[in-house]
Image (cartoon, rainbow, N blue to C red; front, side):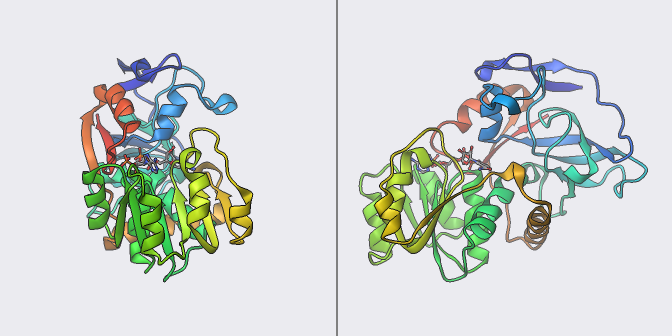
Length: 321
Ligand code: NAP
């Protein structure tokens, strides 16, 4: 099969399309998937660069955790059959490939109304958005959330979840296309996070009170300012951060605010089950609709990794084997 292979950690150029042996047919407890689309996540780029220390994969490896496709074969004890449409929540052999071997627990049914490209944009973005909004920040209907970085994979997912739950949404983006997208997906208000006065705009939109919850995609840039935009007992959930930041703890004290971290790879089983139930329901009834910014051939994985680190997001970048 064709697959992307990383033989050394480094820049996007280390992503090479190679002829690799097919994974073995699915054994007990496994599913082999013919991949129709693979989602590109920022996390894939950090891993490719070797930035995860003890969590770095053994070399060589095939990147990617989010794939959608059809079952090629399934272990006798697995309740799936060849041809079933599925999406993955991680794989054993890597998603940037024509075939991906998975544990059966890593495979979910893909509802008929969701395309394969959309299916490749489900797991990391939507599970992260759900956990941040509901399990970590415990956002309630009627509260106001700032989705700080709403135009990318996690942001669009957070806007759709919040919109369906009756949460008021202010979404930020850095381009006109991004701002239009988040309005279409359900944000009542949008602000451009590259505009010098956007924090004042947010305070004005809330009559000076501030927002109850901030889902933060770039905490190293924004956290210090976020605390000044929080309503009393407001919560910031740090979803993304690429460095350190200075904050004034007094901004938290005076609001009895909280800063909460989250990571999608260590979710307790019971909460993971809640996430999967919410994703299945939302994909099935159409409230969750992954937005595809671009579909690139598998060989363009280096270009996809460059693009995802640039500003101007408008949904997901996916690779088509
Ligand atoms: P993405 O699709 O690349 O989107 C990035 C988002 O960040 C875009 O909306 C972008 O907006 C926005 N952004 C850029 N500059 C910003 C700024 N100054 N302030 C606020 N937002 C800004 O990435 P993603 O998949 O949504 O992931 C977002 C972040 O969360 C990444 O850092 C990722 O690594 C992290 N993440 C963490 C977890 C976890 O488990 N904790 C899980 C998934 C993702 P424009 O492009 O419109 O400027």
